[in-house]
Length: 181
Image (cartoon, rainbow, N blue to C red):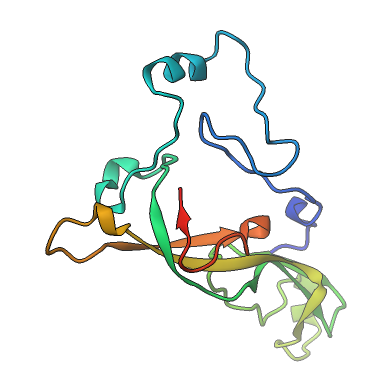
C-alpha cells in the first residue's frame, strides 16, 4: 500500500511473448522479422518448419519457468471476468488517495486502515477507506481447462488436464471443444 502513483496505471499496452517460429494472429505480428543468421534459421534446418506441441503428459518440473508449447483440447471455458490489478482507495477522514498493487491475481484483501500518519492522529474512525473503481485498474480474465487429445492418452489411462489463465486480449479466443497448440 502506497500513496505514490504506481506506473502500471499508466501502461496502455500488453506484452506478448511468442515462441520461436510462431507468428502472431494480429497485425503487426503476422510476420516475424529476422536476419539471415538468426537462431531460428538454424533450428528450422533441423526441424521441418512445423510447430508441434507436446502432450500434457510430457510436461515435467524442468518446464517450470520456460515457454512450453502444448497440444490439447479445451474442455471448459469460464466467463470473462474483471481482475483487479491496482486498487485505488480514498480516505474519508484525511482525503488521502492510496494505491494497492495486487500481487496475487486471483484474490486480494481490500485495505481498511488508512496508512497516512496524519489520519491516525486525528482520532477519527480508522475504517475510513473506500474503494474507487474508477481510479482502479482492471483487466479481463478467463480460465480455460484443457485436456489431452484422445490420441495422446495411452490405452486404459485417464486423460490429464490443466488449467490455463488467459488475461487481457487473449480472452475470448478459445471455445470449448476446440483444439489448441
